[in-house]
Length: 371
Image (cartoon, rainbow, N blue to C red; front, side, top):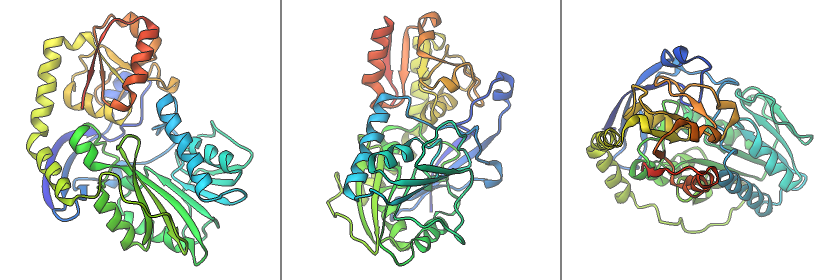
């Protein structure tokens, strides 16, 4: 693999917040060094240390507090329920998080579901969905007709072993499934902040296709989702899936061009944003969004915590502090009291939603899109 980028020291827990600022400032950090395959576009953090990570109820990457994301996830659930006729079927989700998507899918399909995730905290429940606060055992798997694994594979040290185990658990019966990962090429081209330590791997359309073929999932339909930010793959085991051309194609030459540009330009991009906020005034800026992109942006651009704060829609994060930089998170209602001139957004998907909220608040601020 070829060298891609040294991202320096980054928070180990980008999706964990802290009640105490001193604890946030002292939270674990580790170096990130990315390397990539010149053939398939696969990227990996070659400095990753699995002993630093542990997923539990404090891990929270829920996005359903956003209307834009909820609309996307809800439509995806209804689409999968319709396409694969899941009524009365058994559905499993491997890495279900707090459980919202699995509940939505089972309600849309009138199916029974079982979700597996160590970060499940019991805050969401449903009569037709069971949750296990652990990983599913490959030795004694739950029998299922449909599986879901969204934004999980990129977190795994050994995605080959995971997918091979999943393929074996499918057995010889007809099974369909859906796998979703961030599109690494989109991120390296347009969103250089989306490189959290928890992402061991970064997949392009070509590399996820090769991985799935290697692990026995030959029948598949790959599409770009969420305005191009995700790669969604529908899979068939002893069953067919509708085959359609990938929107935007799977141009390996373009993938390599994007990775080369990121290797060449990422340090300049970071410095450009530091200079830009120096001109605006760090203390007159607030970041909207305490997710992985926001944490990545702050760690690179404002590591000293000079900005006025962070706004997020998730009430569970209000009053908490972000890892390593110590920025305080508040709700949108706190924005007027911060007396800032500028709101920074790291994900363009949420721009219209955020602008509507700012208008409702009567906040007269400039909006900068960091991508």
